[in-house]
Amino acid sequence: MLNWLQTLLGRRSSHPDTLPEALWLNTLLNYPFLARRPVAEHLRLRKLATQFLKRKQFSGAHGLTVTDEMAVAIAAQACLPVLHLGLRWYDDFKGIVVHPGAMLARREVTDGIGVVHRYSEVLLGEAMERGPVTLSWQDVAAAGASAHEGYNVVIHEFIHKIDMRSGVPDGCPPLPSRAAHAAWHAVMQPAYDAFCEQVVMAQRFSGQPPWLDAYGATSPAEFFAVSCEAYFVNRPRFTQDFAALTALFDQFFKTNEAIVQ
Ligand SMILES: [Zn+2]
Image (tube, rainbow, N blue to C red; front, side):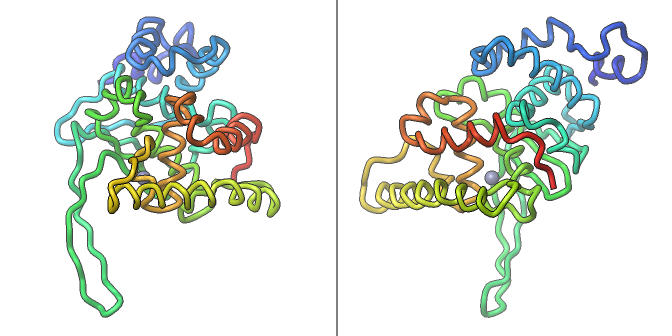
């Protein structure tokens, strides 16, 4: 259980703000999309990941032991979206629950005529408003390979967290002004509409399936999360289809410092 982290939290360390070299290099090796980022970002990410580990509480579900390697892998990926925004964006929660694999969640909805529908949903991760983030380790571990397809479960769930800073997730993070909101929607809405159309055409009329995960057509919030996964782990391929979103995300994630509500 988090041997290095426990040492870090429990005793005085000569390098309290630095992740051990071996652990960090191992993370870069397992997640090449992190290794490919500019060297200056590595230093920042390593420091931020260390602070993240100090502030969050990891727990394993179904008997899973969360090792240092697992915690560092999750921390490094979770910190990528807030590399320039800062960790305050994640300060509304502490818990990160790691499951060995996909989870089965029981859902219940009441329809318009009062009929209750119960069903199960397979989840790879979940983010609760002001609550913990839950992740499937199997999918976190596969994130190095799945970056090629633009998948990343950690980034997905932490983007929901950023989205939730302004209430119910709606595909728009907190922004400083009405004008900024309008500018955000002016780019996101047409991209979302076109994407949904492409997904429908592919599913119903055998059209060309989109490269981006069709799950993004579920709602504007999922489109934001799915788009950000691809933007952070496979920027060149994402930009081929969504150049306007790359510019929008660059502006938000790189320059929009600390607008936390
Ligand atoms: Zn989602």
